[in-house]
Amino acid sequence: MDRETTDRWYAVCCKPRQETIAEVNLLRQGYHVYLPRIRMRLRRRGHWIDAVEILFPRYIFIRLDPLLRSTASVRSTRGVVGLVRFGGQPATVPDEVMDALLQREDSVSGLHQDKRPLFSTGEMIKLVDGPLTGMKGVFTQQDGDKRVIVLLELMGKANRVTVSRDWIARAA
Image (spheres, rainbow, N blue to C red):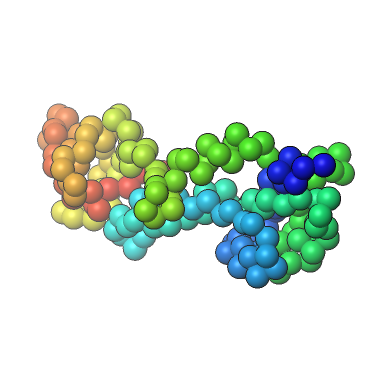
C-alpha cells in the first residue's frame, strides 16, 4: 500500500489547558502535529488586549500512518488524554477539513484571525469605567480604533455618546 494513502489526520484530546505541553511532547517523539491558534480581542484588567488562544480548546491534530507507527505512545504522552474515538476506532479528520484550517492561517504569524466585531449594533452594554460608570446602554458603532458610540438614556432621552472602547463591557 502506498504510504501517502495511509497517512491520516487524527484528533487528539488533551488534558485541560495542556494543549501546548502535549504539542511539545508529541513533537519530541517525531509526530507531525498541528495546534491551531487564534488571535482575538479579550477584555483583561479593564482593557481590551490582543491575545493568542487555542482555536479548539483541549484538542490538537496529529498526522500519522497507523500501519507504520503505533498510536499507543500518543495515549501515554504528557498532556494527552487519548485519540478521539468513535465506536472504539480512532476518528480520522478529513484532509479537506485540515487543508481548509491550514489555508485560513495568516501566512506570517501562523495564527487564525478573529474577524468578529467586539460588539454588535444593538447589543446591550454597560460602562465599567469613566465618568458614567454603572450606566447601561446600547452599542451603536465603532468610532475609530479606540472609541465607540453608545446610546445612553440621559435626562429622559436617548443620547449618542462617544466613549473609550476600554470603558464598555457586555451587559450581564
